Amino acid sequence: MVFAISIAIVLVLVVWGVIDPTGLTESANNLLQIMIQKFGWFYLLAAFSFLLFSLFLAFGKYAKIRLGPDDEEPEYTNITWFAMLFSAGMGIGLVFWGVAEPLYHYLSPPPVGVEGETAESARLAMRYSFFHWGLHPWGIYTVIALALAYFQFRKGYKGLISHTFFPLLGERVHGPLGKTIDILATFATAFGVATSLGLGTLQVNGGLSHILGIPNTTFVQLMIILVLTILYMISATTGLDRGIKMLSNTNLIVALLLMVFVLFVGPTSFIFDTFTATLGGYMQNLVQMSLRMTPFVDSQWMSSWTLFYWAWWIAWAPFVGMFIARVSKGRTIREFVLGVLIVPTLFSFFWFSVFGGTALKFEFIDQAGIGAVVQEDVTTALFVTLEQLPLGTILSVLATLLIITFFITSADSATFVLGMLSSKGRLDPSNKIKITWGFLQSSIAAVLLVSGGLKGLQTASIVAALPFAVIMLLMCVSILKALEAEVKQKQRRERERQKHLDALLDAEKQT
Image (cartoon, rainbow, N blue to C red; front, side, top):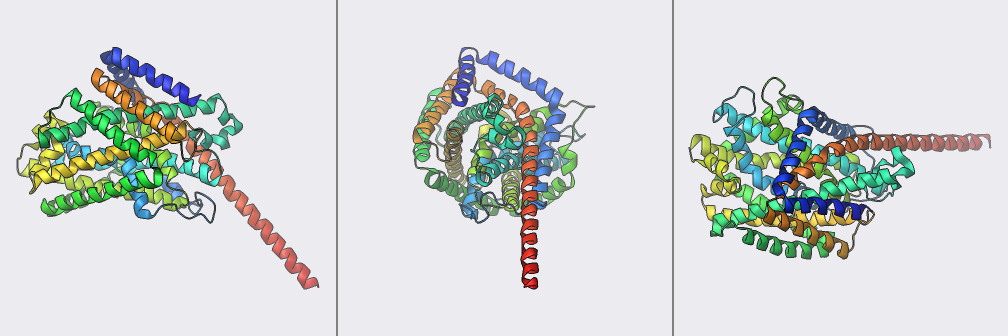
């Protein structure tokens, strides 16, 4: 039922996108604007609450509970685990926005009385880039991934989002309410992946165009989708321990090589100064930025950036959360939360400092004109920045390869998750199911690229974030109830054991 209804919803919107892409985009945008205007405050409170809840679990009385049996060991090494988290969570997004977002905010800063293209707007640009890609998105992913891992590996339930509600709904998770939760998760995942495949294709085409002069045409983009689909389908059929694991480790190595090279060939001292100052500003202003609305001035910037990001992360949470849960068996809650929350966040911070800081130095101090390029074509921002460095062409080739491998890893991970969702939570979905989803995702992306309906479908997927944010808040209540019940049960067993031991000692004394 979940598979059939999800496919039906996807196909209806795809047909709409083909027949009337402008109508789909306008309708989705209007609905999104209404949601942001009426419930923007809710997105801010929800995202901040997820972050606080994650930290509470990491440092509270439940921290030592293991995501699996008490004697379970982690399935993957820390390095491989971190690589999988990073690749599935936001690897390709960092490559795309690492230069573009700081430059955008530098040219058009948040409405806080700061002029664009100034030193203060540069500081704000880096701080808000940290904010949008830092603790908050990973806090969102942590909540849903922890709930799934706990109920699946600790309690033995199926790996479905609906089954995280057993403490609240009981057997009703098998009924219409539970199916609705799983359909909404599949809906958000399928739409998000399809649009990301399309947008990733545009970025790959932008890189090939910049390096090799290959034109930005629909035919080229369809060929890119075809080739990348074949590659990620090969990876998907090799299994989690080979395909995704190998690609994730490769992604991390290539990303580190590119970042380290730019760090030491580029303005090294400027980058470290930027990282230090921005990290301090981020920590100092974290609460204020987390709850900042602009009721007395134009809120268009907040709607276009912060609120849009929070909705986007929540819409992606089912996909990323299920994948993180799948690769995190055997870790304690503290280890899980700190690993998922802190390590990718610090990596993101340093990535933005290296690439965003380098771009801002070239734009603000050296007057290289990168900002104008970003405003004209955002897909070339990274490549234009790399051109300013020694071996710029080689770096651009490396960056394009990194985009491609991140693309394949994300698509492979998404196919795996969609297979789990439509296979009643099976930990290892059949190749037939994964191939079906992979073919469907690529087909949707190709059709929407041709018709121009890609943006509308992306916006439609984000609309699903509002009801799913409510589901995630209830999920926090559910997991808290389950953890508290487990702690009380453990305390009761310890009291009974102690009582039994005291009775034995008393009997021994009497004899």
